[in-house]
Image 1: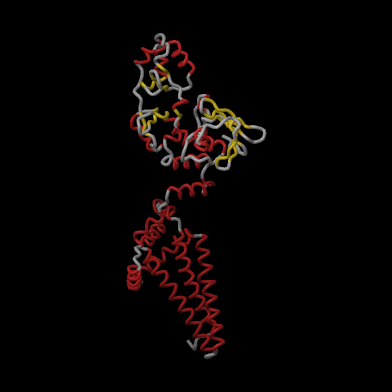
Image 2 (image 1 turned 90 degrees about the horizontal axis):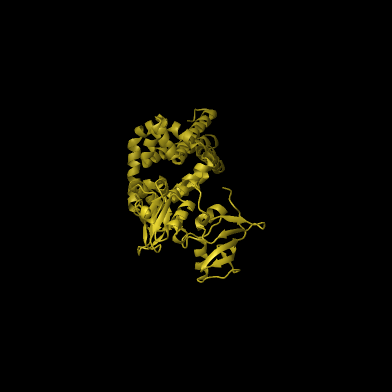
Length: 425
């Protein structure tokens, strides 16, 4: 060493720092690479991706060979600098202190921080390239890495840490998937993004959230006269209509408008003729998740179901179209009673029907009304007051000022909501 020129020793130090930088690059890029992108590249037959996947399958060995190389090179560089100072400056304490500071600075800047910042910026590119070097190095230094890992495993055992059980850390939860879809929205069309988010909500949304309440359902009473039944059929807004006798509690079944039209072509429609085309009602337990109900509709070849509570009393009606609209948005025409229409006022407020579903109001008006209780605006207001409010009563729910415009038969009919921004459809 004493016979070598100074520039040769400095070049050797620079080479050691560059090699150490490679290991720093490899460590950060391997840990930061997108695992899902890596799986895609493996399926495409990318050799670098396959090597990287194999390396990441044994993280302890991978980190072992990276840190072994990194620390050996850093220690060699520090030792070489110490020899240079010893040869040219003797045992001068000031020179040793200056040399220590310089080599520490060089290692931090050129072998640690800068390489790791670069690797964090381009993890995929660097990881795939470095895998070609790390794979043979792991085979060469496997005995050393294995010996070092014996002590690592012993320490982990004492600390009761089982890294193999934490491999699920890269599996995304439902909430993380939602955030991913929202943050990567520039890669996904706005409409597609909305559909994906709605799909995620199907499991947490139940039939109670979207059903048409029993009081708003168009239904035919078979005990009415034939003339009344014919008028109802001619003016109804739906293709499938519940049929009952006497009261809505006694639901007989569901009739299809298409079959009714076929009956009309053969003569007048009567209560007796309707009885021949009635289909037995399909009942849905209250609280059924929408995704499960979508599958049940498919398996049972049904399109309409009556939601019943734990006592067997039916609460409302859900159709296949209702669930599909939860995914892709409105595409059918609702009856005036169920339209949930709003009227925008000059002052920015809106007038809405008390029977409007809270989910529809949140979607159309950009509100954040609570959905974990009542499902309609009327129900929410009644729950707030624990009483039947009079017209002209003002209130505030979830920060939204409201005024009750009209009540009728113990029901809030019309409400004015202030300070809302309507979302264009």
